Length: 218
Length: 218
Image 1 (tube, rainbow over the protein chains, first blue to last red):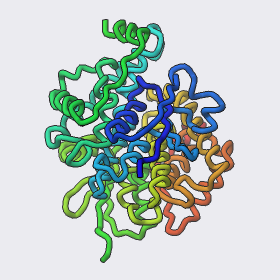
Image 2: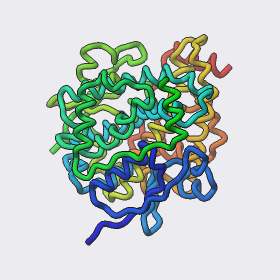
Image 3: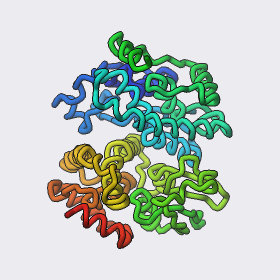
Image 4: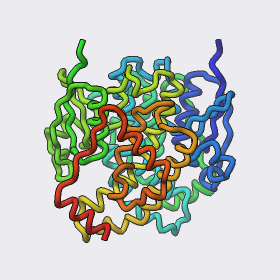
């Protein structure tokens, strides 16, 4: 039986959305992708909010109409029964632990710093938040670097959902103003992730966003 | 075979920690509790950080020495194989989705507002964050209220881990300055949670914290 095809509503240059694409590609699973411009209000329309009360991407939709939101919950559901999610309950709990770390201690700083530098006006008052985001995001990167002193991956003994989730915004952390050269084990792990079978890179940002990121680096 | 006894390192008046106690009590599972004063640096000692790189509570420790962190990952591991975590993979994914919602869209506003009002000095500059936290936390409560228009619980068809996780800081949201009377379905759901078998309330805060919360309400 071939796996059920699913539809993903997502913004391609969002790390949270790219997680889902990367896993689907690596599982070789059929899917449709509907591009949603979440940076410009497309997730706040009545039609979108009717499906997803919290108005965010990514959103997975099944052929029968069921909807699943929250990127890391989508990863777990898609990975069920595959080597990307450990079957052993303790190993699975450890992978989940890293998924919650990613959403609580990593993404709110590293992804948000990237968003402010790339997707808000260069004179946005939100830029005042950047020093705090850089400090907290740096703490998250330090935790990852220490973990990688004693393990090769974040999903038990092998590559899987927690690596995909943490790769999403770590690999583009420099967009947020983080210096990855200070984290040699993270740099090596990013290379190992890129070398996994079926890996696909996150699409590049628009010229407008690229220009803002260049301004922010200057 | 009786279930393995575990040790929980936690601060009793922390909602994230109380989640774990509530589930253990409702499962009737043996456990030891080590009180950790995380508001005053006890999670930043070298001994604690050696066990938990990210320096947070709660932390679960097995008799054999394995450690699990992140409150919602702990809930999932403890609930495995019980009615508190759906066995059906789609229902389980929906419960996980609410757990990620809780950690990303709810706790960082509702729990943090409570922390600032109760655990930081009354002249703390962090109080300037409160209006933004009230706005964002109110959005999370609205999402919950809308969900409860069409469902009785957050964990599939029955009470379980997602209800425990969301109860933790919703039931004390007024400590953070939220007015729960504006959310009648949430109010009803809180009462249903309190009526579940084996329910234990979160311990009261210290007199010092209670005085700051009273000051904040005035």
